[in-house]
Image (tube, rainbow, N blue to C red; front, side, top):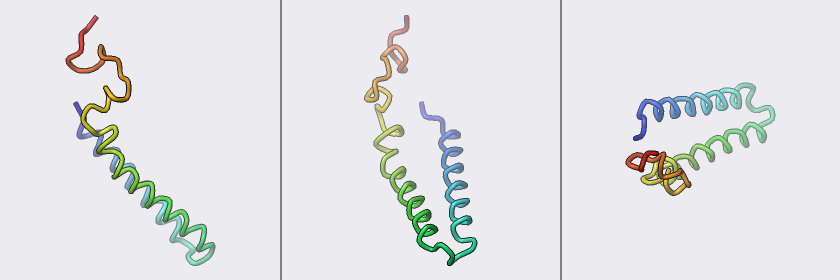
Length: 80
């Protein structure tokens, strides 16, 4: 069972880090514009990657089983 509060906390942390990178990259603009632009682009690309990958990955149905979690640890599995 997914914990909604943990997902919300993870999203909040990602947003705070992205905001911090944005503020850091924008302060002192246009000095080192290439490096700052690369930082902003990398942050945006990583956030986009997570949005695309997470629903089919760790947030997707059956992820624990597909990733190799032992059946005994899965909900409904036999307990020893």
